[in-house]
Length: 135
Ligand SMILES: [Zn+2]
Figure 1 (cartoon, protein in one colour):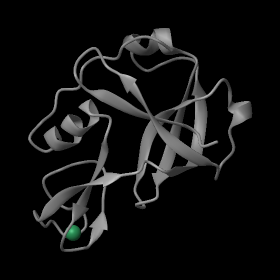
Figure 2 (cartoon, rainbow, N blue to C red):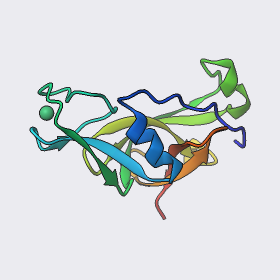
Figure 3 (tube, rainbow, N blue to C red):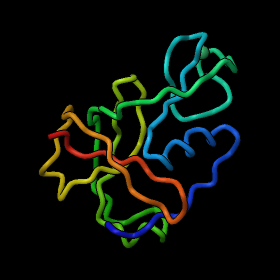
């Protein structure tokens, strides 16, 4: 679990998100017209197509919705990580995202449990948001 990940390559739409991760801050896109969050970052709100978007800082508090242990990663770079726990989590802002969970095994996890944000470095300036049991 100590392999440095490849460096993300931000686009115009994801630059603000990735720059925040460099400071270990999680920001979530928010539509000013819908007055609601969405994820992943993009130029337009997926609900109303508005471009009136801002990024708001998240505490990272989340609940675990689904998880599985990955033994055969889909890409070669992840082979050194395996086995790892891939998961769907829901932030308290309401958005769902796919991530990895820091845990020794699935035995330590259960659907609905509270999770806290933690960070993994990449081989560049950015960090990847991971989640772990909130104890
Ligand atoms: Zn909207």
